[in-house]
Image 1 (cartoon, rainbow, N blue to C red):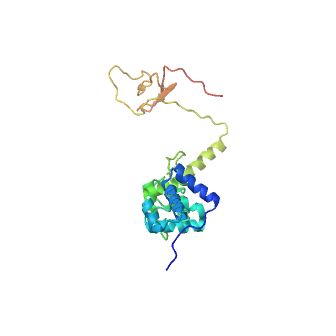
Image 2 (image 1 turned 90 degrees about the vertical axis):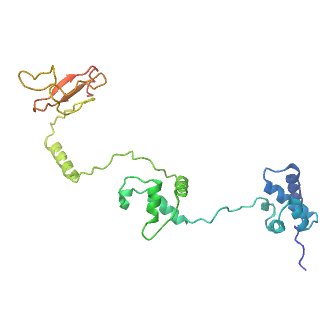
Image 3 (image 1 turned 120 degrees about the horizontal axis):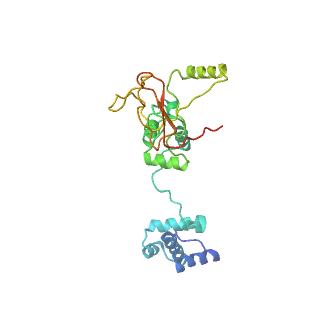
Length: 248
């Protein structure tokens, strides 16, 4: 016949700790119930009696007693692993983070930035390494690694196929004409488009130019200029706002 399951002889420190938990109570019901099991077993009670006392299964009482005999009071705080096992290995998580921090264009994707939906869909069809992960799990993984998706804050690249040739031309002009002068026109709410002649407006008697297409407002900038449909020189109109001197 097998020997009854009971705790080993308690030390003075172990007995005092268990009595303190039972008498004063504990914020954790698990610690309280397990301390009662151990004290009851140390007092000579059998497993069925202890199970009825704490309203627990007999196998649970036996497991607690065996665990105390192995690791001592550490059995009062069990380390349970809840939920299903993890589906992603540490290497898979590193791959997800590396993909999320890589520009989509470099991976052959037709967009400029990732979203949770786009990244999860891309990971499911990666050649040679399929990673199935939901959006919420993906969000938590990236948040734990310090990765967030934000809108692009840098300058976008030009889609012009002749971009390099134009830049070479600009550099050539800058090198050949050191005494160059740049002129800038400050535009406010002005539409650059020809407008039909309206009542009360007449062409310039000498040049035949039409008036500016729109009058500047108080919120406009210092100078507004536009070219009429006849190809005349630029007509200007002073705004109400004072002119801002150009920095030297």
